Image (tube, rainbow, N blue to C red; front, side, top):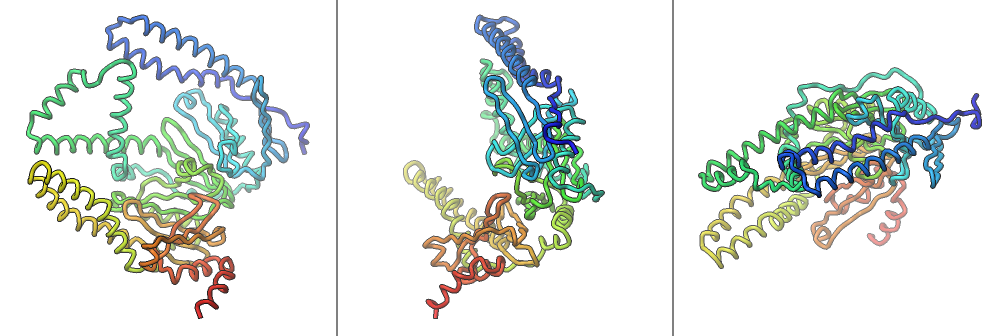
Length: 500
């Protein structure tokens, strides 16, 4: 067996230097746009910018060379060690048993160069809780990933592939936020780029003419056409983004203890999750996706970084048919995975009333009041608009509140705690009851009057806590004690004498 002293050090790939030059793409592209906009005539400021780019290129290239020369790593029998730095040396050593997941990513430039970035997570929520190597050759990164996971306790096995990409899933892409948000995000990004290189977007001929024609045309016709164009562009963009993110998607058990997700067209990604770190799954059904019969799945697992990183790396199934989502839950959780469709305990009718009142206070009352005030001050037409808005919006708010109420529920199914809530973002959370570390009960003067309370199950994974919203206050403590026997027993024993 190789001892610690005998373990050789390894280095990064020399092609890392070429990958670091990719940052020149954006500034050179902006410089090219400036050349086109000015007809090739550059002023002193443009030449100064080009000189600055040259200087920054030399500095970053030198820094990249130092990073390449001064970075080395090795896997000893008990630790993963990384040495970096020139003037300030940094030595990090992570015990192998603390490594929770090993992810591989590669942007388009790195893919062309045959490189990958390896990130070994230790389950901490801070940036320093992970070791990152940029960049290794793809074969070296794959070998190191297998080595780290095997050393951390994984056992090789031939487990079946759980799911692979299906081109028919593209139809679910437009049923996401990006059908609208993607268009405005893309327009905003282009606008900032043009403004940054000195081009005033509103002065471009076809843009100016489009605004003039829009204002001079019949709005009853141009507004629906504009919305149709936005929806069409959003649908195309959402499908393109879906294809880029989930190209060659594959979910599999790579060994007896590791769940791996591989995906990506231009930027490839590979996320590995230890079975021992899995605490459950989240079946997500946003409103549009739910209307189309689709759903997505996230893993509730420790060791995936902070909350933002967790949301990106925990997705194990993209928007797909709900039957496929239930299939994934079943095979990830085991034989009892089908409880995502189990009948749940309904919540008190007071929960429906609270949702309707909140909807009226936040969506109906402010707009109605604003229109009424403006109608009083300016024109009586706005008073009619205020009344019409209140009449039309109130039943819509009630329908949404009723849907949110029907989504509420909780249940215990064997070793699992099931929680469901939400209308715009409906989520069914299935948690291992043994992973619940604490219970928090939250109420307000209004909820106490309604006889409901929100119970939060704290877990060291995923969102850190999952809420059972507006459950009956009289049943909350008993349900929590049944879910995790003994955790609240002493508090229940204290309450009983005072209740008699």
